[in-house]
Image (cartoon, rainbow, N blue to C red; front, top):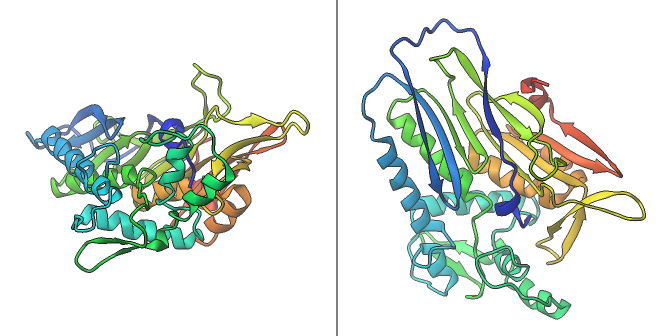
Amino acid sequence: MMVGKKYSIAILAIFTLFFFTSCDGNDIEEKDYEGSALGTTYHIKIYTDKGDLKITKGLDSIFEVINKSMSTYQQDSDISKINNGGDSIIVDKHFQKVFKASKDIYNQSNGYFDPTVGNLVNAYGFGPNKRIDTLKQSIIDSLLQYVGLNKLKLTTEGKIEKEDPKIYLDFNAIAKGYTIDVIAEFFDKKEIDNYLIELGGELVSKGDNVVKQKTFVVAIDDPLQKEGDRTFQATLKLENRAMATSGNYRKFRTDSVTGEMYVHTINPLTGKPEKSSLLSASVLAKNCMLADGYATTFMALGFDKAKELASKLDNIDVYFIYADKDSKNVYMSKGFKNVLLD
């Protein structure tokens, strides 16, 4: 699993593109909501002719429930209790859905997506716990024995069984996308048919902007942009779909001898950082939990393996930015090409 995602995730700018439609939107209002949650920010637009839908109260409730279930930064959360050795915790439906989706992606990627890599993430200084300043091979080997999602099982009673109590579980690479899906479900139950949800750069859209007769368009950041600049690699229409981008933005290195650009990701199979030419991975999927999880997975796999896996997945479209020596290149699936505006 890629580390540093929490700090270097691609931020997708939200735009709109003129789109002709028969709906005049006379009675529909645009309502904007923004704030901080889950260690990041959110921006939401909804379009409705309904009155007070208590959206802010509903959002606060969702964030509270997700944090109580899966936040490793909250000591009384279910996941923190499980990480601290609790074996009698009955996890909620949100935890179970994320756990099952993680297992699926773990199996699809042959272990490259692994939410149990948390001990290594902490050791390298990317998690909530104190890092280890000198990581010797012996320490890495000792930590690897606690890595492997196959060492955990969700029982029919809703408990998590570990092969070893020291296994550390962290859903940071997928829970944010899942949270957006929960918000979308909340809007659907409110019979809101047009909305755009952005949380920490991850997105879900439904319908379009019926007030201004525009469809939603998003932009992917240029991974080679300089600090302080904001330049975009591409723009695309996002219609009734989810999108997530993962990348080590501004954290790439250049080999002084070959001129090759690369980034470092932690390989959960070896416990060591690996060179990767894949600078960012953008994923379109039917829901944001899958988009989020696979974006992280592709970064961990590297370009060649990511391209191979993406070709085998249904209803997943990708846009990869990768380095070839001192140049930047792009690979995209056919489905992504169909919605691209550039």
